[in-house]
Amino acid sequence: MFLKEITRSLVASCAFLAATMSFSSASNAISLTYKSQFGGFSSPFAITSDSFGNILVGSQSQVQKFNSSGVYQSQFGTNGSGNGQFNGYGSGPWDISVDSTGNIFVADTYNYRVQKLDSSGNYLSQIFGISFPSAVAVDSSGNIFVADLGSNRVQKFNSSGVYQSQFGASQFGDVAIDSDGNILVVDSNNGRIQKFDSNGNYLSQFGTQGNGDGQLYIPIGFALDSFGNIFIADRGNNRVSVFDKNGAFLTNFGSLGTGNGQFYDPIRLVISQDKLYVTDRGNYRVQIFDINGATPVPFDFSPNFGLLCVGVVVITKRLIKKKQNIKDE
Image (cartoon, rainbow, N blue to C red; front, side, top):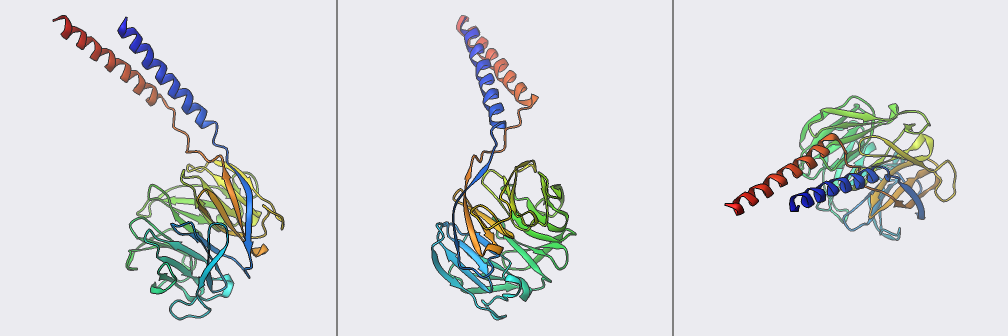
């Protein structure tokens, strides 16, 4: 009688888990709610965040720092080609990234280099040999990945700025590292996102060029949330498009305009403390949105899970029988 009760309990537990996971797969809806904005930029382009939730915005040869609410804190950089200066042509610098120790990497696009600065904006070093750096990202080991738009490739450097390798053959607008160490790049002209492993081997892609659901038109920047969902600045369509970590389309948000939640040339974005920040370049502002309903990518409820439950039940039955035999002896 006791054995039957234990078995029933295990089967019920497996059924409950299956139902819970099935429910999770149906509740992956994401929406954005406009929260606020901050402006005063001549042409905001690059954006990132640090570990304290501060937001760094690159615009016309300067990098400005704001707190998470958009209140101005400080700035660094002037127009020029010297150490710690940035070429402001074309709204440069084009991209900013912060490593795990707080150092700041700036894609100084029209000076054809990436500069490394400390958390206060003091110059440390630079990487040359890049024909047209459009984006920069740093992984957890300190490796530096630079999207080189001029040579249609991504270049990898170690933490000291020494060249390691390169991969890709397309015009990449942005680069990011996911939680598995894979490298995601925006292939702007083809309206897609490509994924490579940490060694630059091609893995997958999603997106096609157009204006329908799941399509992108001249996407530039993108950001990943803690669940791996991918938020893309779909520049040509003046909206933000969202996909899950496997590349399945989730939703679009925004339209052309000047109102709250509308965009005119969205370029880059960053996610910090469950908020999405978008550089709305044509409207000379950064918009802030609350991210609603973000959930982990659903568990793959496959036959393997069912086999696992059956295995647990069978093993438990055998253990109970063995225990009963020992008592009888």
